[in-house]
Length: 231
Image (cartoon, rainbow, N blue to C red; front, side, top):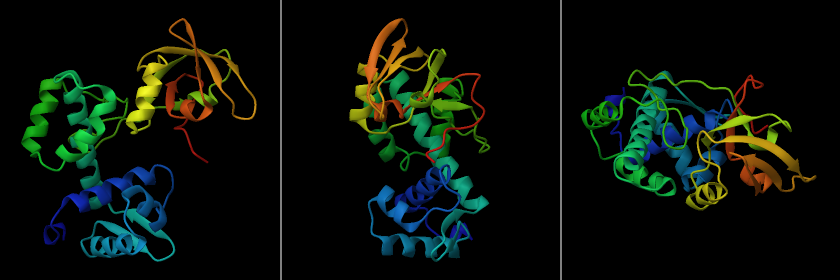
């Protein structure tokens, strides 16, 4: 049924947003989608109903939206395009990390699958983008990792920065300015109470970040057993 629906930029963005939010909740509310996409709740409902007819989502009033297998397959293709483009911009064109998200948001809808696979081949089929986000394979497989937010890292445990979660250019630049880069070795030295600033040793140097900033820095350590949760 998907051939009955033109996969416009708005459709692809909607499916990608549902996929992203489904990593946090089982069913995505229209309110969450309205906030993520910057459109009105009635517009979200209208799009959801169109995508139900196309077999891409399951939408139930008051219960929200969830992707069907067909919808998830499309969302993963869009994510693959986005994250490979980000990687290409950083590694081949010299873009700074905080510059690539907006650029990739535009390009992901304009390039062909052949172009994307050529990029993947050129880059050696990377598993992660420059933020540390997993790049879905051409078959739609997403590598799972066990990560922990820096704000939740136990004191005295050494970990490795594995993902910078924020897409905000300002937040990303702030994180990088504090010395937190992918693969950096980190250890909590001190934390102020009541979600105050956190002092961490980053590659041998003490750095101070706010609690909210630390929530956007994900680290890997063999102490973790599950993906981080906002709950």
